[in-house]
Length: 144
Image (cartoon, rainbow, N blue to C red; front, side, top):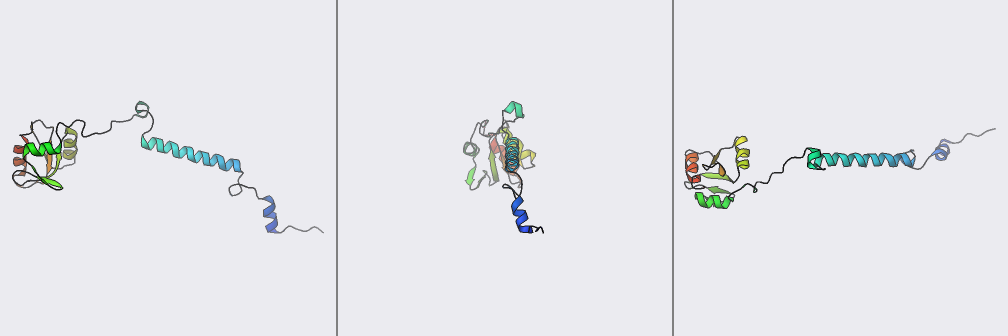
């Protein structure tokens, strides 16, 4: 009379080492594939590789084109510090002193009120109050 193996002993006899019954080589290759995919995604997302091959862009350095620092603009235009911002000669509230055309375009394209000097290379983002625009334009004429 033949005896049947119990379910517990039958499973133990056929179990293979590795990941959930998979052979170890297959688990290793799946792990390698996952690591490779993560590397590719990271490389693409972070813009790795050489700029021409990846179509890389230019990085933005606002100080590269600046002729003046914000402190120099403030001194020339007669603005006073009022941390964290500035105050114009007649009490106008200035949020930011911008020192490059790129920054000016950035604020203006966002719809922020901005005025510049006649050269258009420095300006201020300000809080719109009656008479503020005209007073700040006049002050920025001193920054040549």
